Image 1 (cartoon, one colour):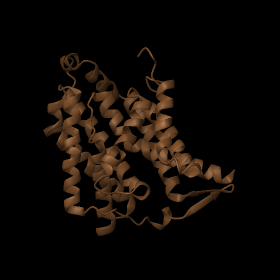
Image 2 (cartoon, helix red, strand yellow):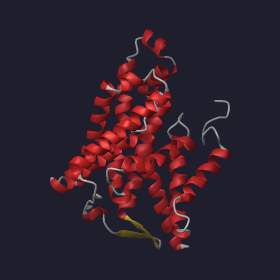
Image 3 (cartoon, helix red, strand yellow):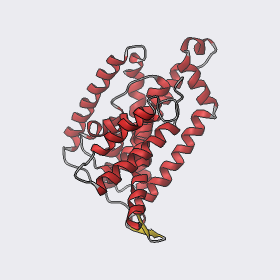
Length: 288
């Protein structure tokens, strides 16, 4: 029983990390109606910035996470203002083709500058090792992931649902012409939203270096995981992808621990079952 609880908590932490990596795609797809399959590339950029700051510049881990978040956000802002803004009124096929091309460009650039080998980081002492809670062991870094990601869930939900910015953004998405007529700064809202999604991806990539590994194939390797979270959780809420990420993270870790011969196939089975049960998303009404 103790071993099961340890694996369950590990799956919970993995689900939290998966949520942070995926929620930016949920925000841009659900709120902006932009199919950005290059989302994982911003996570890769955040991961490499974290590696450089930690390993080459000796920056403390919290500051390296902050630097990775800011770097991915700035890159997202620049690309949104120069490239993505031209795709908002294009069909989804053009958005998919462009974003896939961007993945290969950024992957090639990272391979050129950093090489193709897996990147490793050394966690600080306060995040290393394991702690025991009533006989259940859990790594300190997993606890850190749960705390950080839990705070992000609350902040995102409140920010997008309960604030003036969230209301303005939803109005801009529902009818951009009317929103502009009411004086809302629609281009600025979209730029800020895309920047937020990119920054979250960068933070997730930095947090995931220790757990998922990092190399130039990162965006393609985990793209399907991001899409699964968005498809299962729906795009009309932050809570839906959060619940989906937790369920998929727990199922994935339990499956790999108890039936390793099946491997990652478990998560695809869970996706099919969840979509059959809730084809409109976990928290989305069927008539929405």
